[in-house]
Length: 171
Ligand code: FE
Image (cartoon, rainbow, N blue to C red; front, side):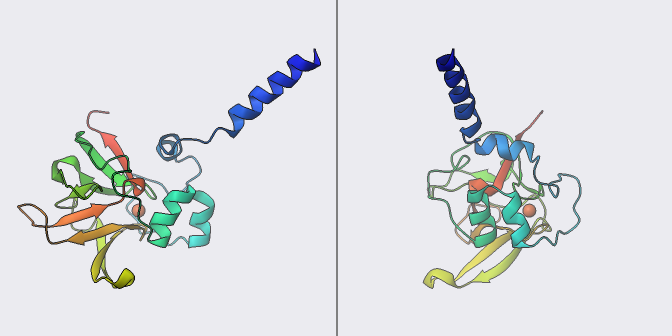
């Protein structure tokens, strides 16, 4: 009897300790009161608050300007039709129609969904001169923009998958 009880407790513990996938966490956003796909009001949330809310890897990229390893993110080679939102705040950022196959290993777009979706900042870190791209609603780091993209804009928004939330068309 005790052995059965121990097995049941162990099974429960294993289930409880199983790490949630990024998908489950990010799709539900149940711990994130700031997430909205309709409210475009600019957010002023401290990093200390974001740290309590966001999954560690999302926080590292979004709030500490981290970069995921190339060819590892969920969306770098995705050709699915739909919309990409900020995984931190829900702001609409990119349409799949502006996504192109890039050999860089990160999801790449030639334009944002509208000019107000993102902000640009000079970034001279890591011994390079680059332009950083931030979500305009929550000021989270998304990636960088380069001038080697395809027509019509010639731009390449080189983004981190972990800070993007994809919603397929027709859902
Ligand atoms: Fe955002």
